[in-house]
Length: 262
Length: 335
Image 1 (cartoon, each protein chain N blue to C red):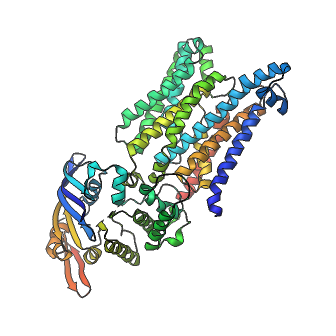
Image 2 (image 1 turned 90 degrees about the horizontal axis):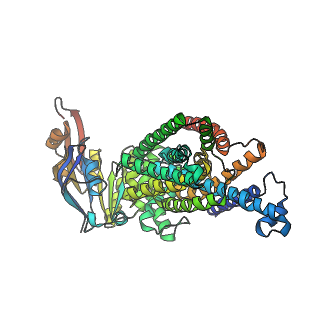
Image 3 (image 1 turned 45 degrees about the vertical axis):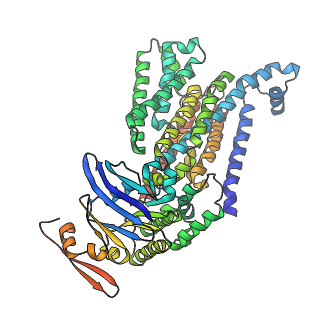
């Protein structure tokens, strides 16, 4: 089943077309990587897919329903969003911050969380290894800890689909792997993940499919081996690279920058 | 379990403090009646207590009621605006409501309407507050984020300030200017039950709108984008926050004049005690605001009973050093 399908979406920001006729889909059980150089329109495409910014053209279907027909709380039950900005405005305890992911599921009230919500919060914190931080103020954490807490917040939402913008940025290698393992677990449970990544090795090894965005257009899409080719990296990233298929998957090594291009 | 009890206990303590100060406010004044005597005169006056009953019911009761409700309005609106704008320095005056309400009141003095009808002054102040909201929305646009609202509020505030100065400048005689300036200082002295009846319904409506933002404010801790993706309708929250502030604070300014700093100080003092959660801050800040204003109004009566010290002057005197402390603390944390 398709959890998200984006058809011919264009987005204009401040008079410039930032995303142009982009189409992609995410099915249950797959992790789709969104890659592309800075300014390619990855964030804009994901925000448009969630209805956070208006589209100039195209349509979006979320969990089988047209995006416009879904009221905001229903959208939130169908898709969780992890923005790139790691904003935490107040020194709220980590556990309470992660619990914000339960807002779309709750009726309201200032009282303690019901058991089902507490369970979801505990699972999410365990998955991102932040359970030991539960009572710390979220604003007093290190950059990497803060990132993991916010990922846990998105996981606690337990939506069928997760859209994550650069979640791996600022994480050490072990926690990067912990992150992609968490995404694989979600896929294993029949959920879908659309994640933008700058780390091409991570994208190559852990995503089922990749979508390469270049200047607002989809330049390539398909299995990692088809998208991450030396020619594509040269043409769209302006770098020379060696791509090798080893025993433990595809590996990408960037060798140098090509002069006179980008 | 201890952590779960802390919040209800805090609310009970703040409520108790406000109740205590309310009673103290009822029992403080130049008539010199004892506590038991005063309360008896308020609820069931003996035949020989008519004068005291009049003092209690017509002078002290409205003053205490307004102290409580104006304080609740300022504390609640301050907490909501700080949460909505995600800025610890936000306060009700920031979005132009106080300034515009003050201008409405000043206009009532200037045109002489204030002298003709008792309620003309608060009514025009309220009209000013509503107009300020309309202007802020017109400037900020339909989809304006919190920063645009702040900027629009500053624009409206400075316009209102300039218009107040213009009115003072053009005032026909020194006495009118003197009257306007004294009113602007903010006070709860000599208010009647008529003022209470006019202001409280508006304030209560404002409190209701402000309270409806609670859950959305929690989500906004993660920023506007994440909150929107959590199902928060940002335009609705903005409308509730700004309109609620206009009603509550507009009505407060209409009967009490401009009382600064309470809306800034109270949420800030209480934030650490509620685990910094915006929704939990709202009830605490409302009760705390009521308590603070009742305490300040008691202070002006006890410190200088004969000098008619203005409430707004006292809150500013407490508030300004607090603001400096806040800036220094922010600086330390940033370093």
